[in-house]
Image 1 (spheres, helix red, strand yellow):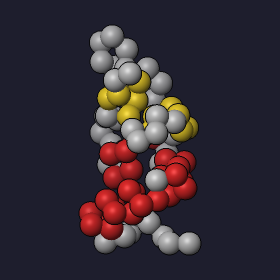
Image 2: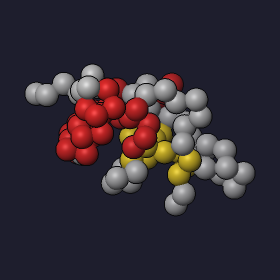
Image 3: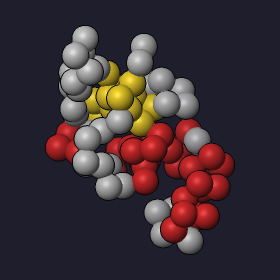
Image 4: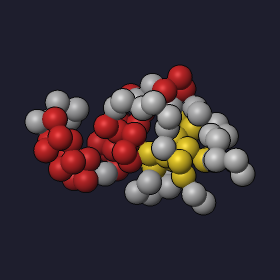
Length: 80
């Protein structure tokens, strides 16, 4: 399954998620993002990134922390 990037995405978390595309390359469901690391579907209604960020910190903590700490000095990640 090929994933496309979310159009006009600003958040770094979208590097880890994609959207299913139709045969014309247009997003099928913009409220369901698919993790590029584990292929799990995560809800992102209205482009909201809270669920996406939560998935990354729970399931892919090391990968997400490494990428975001170098890109934004850890601003997207708050250690628990």
